[in-house]
Length: 260
Image (cartoon, rainbow, N blue to C red; front, top):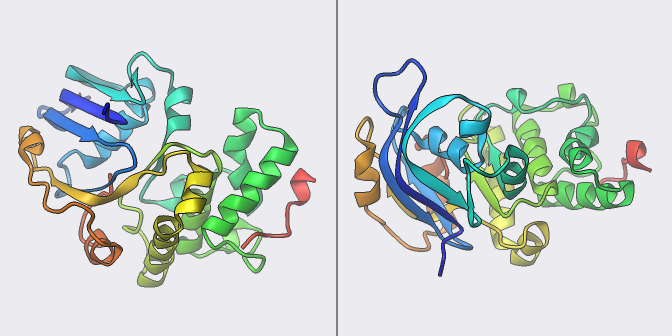
């Protein structure tokens, strides 16, 4: 079966850097698979995430020295950034850098507006995304009144509302305190546990848990030789691991005033 995403002999070097962030990387991300990507800081995990959603090369300049990336049957260098962003959603480390609006529902709706959806469809997706991430009626409306963990859940809800086929979590708890980290892990656990909801939000729900791969710093050619340590790792194992890794290659509200 053709993998959802395929990376072949990928070597990418950031502008101004002597060493590649990724070197000769081979990786298959299978349909429906949850994959945990392990590696120290600087080993190229975030770079891989940016290549999967098309930010590299369409949004960030980098030296694409060799190899290719295919997502959902499309070469990421030939496909548009809009197409790839609608297919792969990436949740980054710092919620403050991902929020562009002032209010929770406006933030969740931002991507939907860019998709040109009707107000009725937007209301439905906002409600589903809030429910999936535990953003209930008691959640403050203004983003500046939210904790770091809740802001990150809003960012996650904004991604889920767009219904990408794949979800990449790039060190989503790194900038959060323990309480905020538990909020994000609880939201992720709910998504993994509720298969029906996951299928509703995305036709084939994918994230990065389950198969674990290690990437060595500086010598990313080791990545394709990495140990597939375990298939189907439990969520409890993920919870104990996600705090020490740099990247995971990832109630309905009555307040929809702006969309009624």
